[in-house]
Image (cartoon, rainbow, N blue to C red; front, side, top):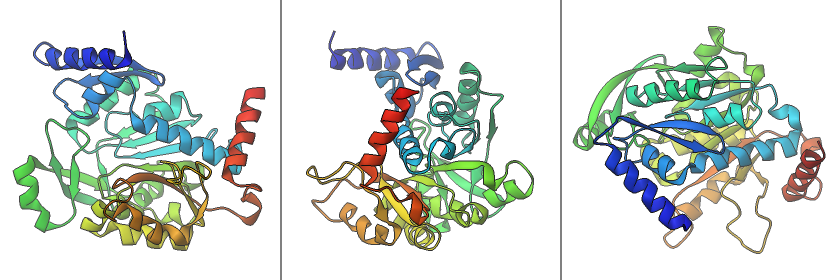
Length: 321
């Protein structure tokens, strides 16, 4: 059976199952996942492919951090998952990538229910604190646009002008908000314990970072989808770029270098992020988005011979262990 035929058969099975059961289970290299059969987005893709792109992106981010700062960059640290959806990054963070514990934040009710089920299914619920909230720049509440059939397309309405568009696209619900600073102040976790802040918040990442001053001031690594056009719609790109330039030193395009002639991954100065973003806006340029890892490095952490050589050394050390 070819891979293509297998994918077609699995997605056909998924579509037929919606009339029979609200949930299906699928296995991946990083654990078993329950998916809601009404979901034509994350759930359908995960069941069909038995994988999600964000699982691979997280693995690349972890390998790069370990290549730059050693195993202690991740091992035993806390993973923060802003926009956790059904757990396709939280579960691999614990099961496959060496984090000791995680905090997962998901504001949409059905996603959150499935997230909790997946934590239990993978026996990591005792190491993950899941919260049914949206992270933002203020503690309070905010409107969330909900697309009932596309679980990864819910988005926080940060401007009243977006309300009418959201109502036409689906439902609008009010959800509670917290800030990462408030969670630290309340003793949920220590800023010093965080190894990575992962954000997939559909354009709300700048707001999250404005409420995470204790983390960004320490240079805690950030991983996020980099969609310049989408971020520009809510004004978050300028906020993120300013934070990257002020508090961080470098970034890595986790999608890889667009130049096939050069190394796959390059360590670029954070000051270059604004100009680098333009290629995702130019017609005929790269696709509209990628994923980036933003880091703060001391001079002695800069890898001699470049990031690719550091990654090769990390792979060699890992194979010897």
